[in-house]
Length: 189
Image 1 (cartoon, rainbow, N blue to C red):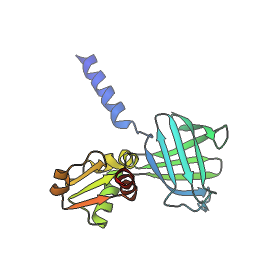
Image 2: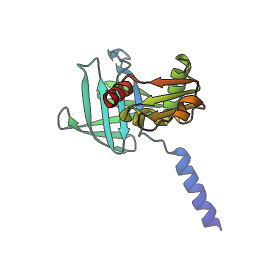
Image 3: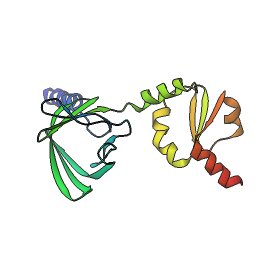
């Protein structure tokens, strides 16, 4: 009985302490050790860690795009770059929580915050007053934002191949993206 309880406590402690690094992150700042900003952050800058792969883009650094694979061990994050060139870089993890990631490499500190997609999508829906709406997207856009909308009440996301007359009547507003309209125009012109 003691062994059984010990195993349960061990697994619970591992589950509660473990932080996931694999998610979409938003650049907050890139500074030197003195806290002076090295690079201006753009709202289009992105950083993604998923399935052992990384991708990031920095608009203000000549629209730099980088990708490759990564390994995460203890407080070390190792990037094996395939783009822009083959190289290996190590980053020390200073802080990792569910909502923040701070990395250090040589004299540079990189700060990130987790992107809360549902929360951000909810604020966009409120801002554009498209609650109680059907949002019709092209297939690639649907794949990108469907998860961020699925928990928002009275909003349905679908692609141009899967909406019906009932959907159009059910919701007060119907929103088409520019790309979905172009796709419909191609189909029916």
